[in-house]
Amino acid sequence: MKDIVLYLAPSVALALVIRVLAGTHPFFFLFTVAGTICHELAHFVAGLLTGARPASFTVIPRRVGRHWELGSVTLTRVRWYNAAPAALAPLVIVLLPFCVAWWRTRHQAWQFDTRDLLIALALAPQFLSFWPSMVDWRIALRSWPYLFIIGAAGWTVFHFRPHLFQFVNP
Image: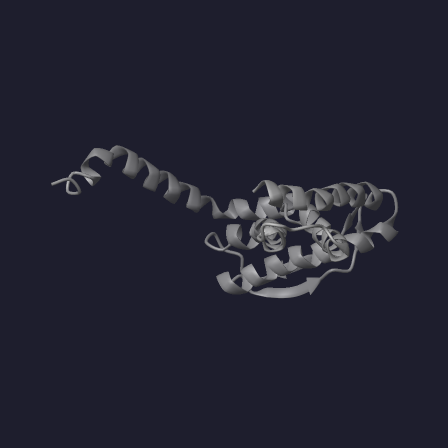
């Protein structure tokens, strides 16, 4: 795990630099494109898989009030059961850098080389894009019945815990 964290350190540092620079001038949005594409694709694919019916997909930045919207996906059938999976799908993106880092460091004697610099540049935007936006979190709240179901299941397991395992021990 130490090797993976060490491998990802340059990507995280680049992500911070990109974040600062993107706030200074729209030109630096070019460095966020890979992350934006992954973020919006995560919404799109989750929307397809959960029946939320994606209708549009864009990664062209546009000015919205005082901030920039880097991309968007329009879902036409968001319901209580698919809101959270579709809205919070970008959280899965953070697995990509860790998988790549595992792949690159899985051998005993790994060393940084020039291709790792390119990989670090490609992975940096993923650290900027995996967190859902405030709009995504608001949409995810439509899945509040999940909280009830999870709470009820937790209460049931906790309440009947002694009885669940009485048949396990002879």
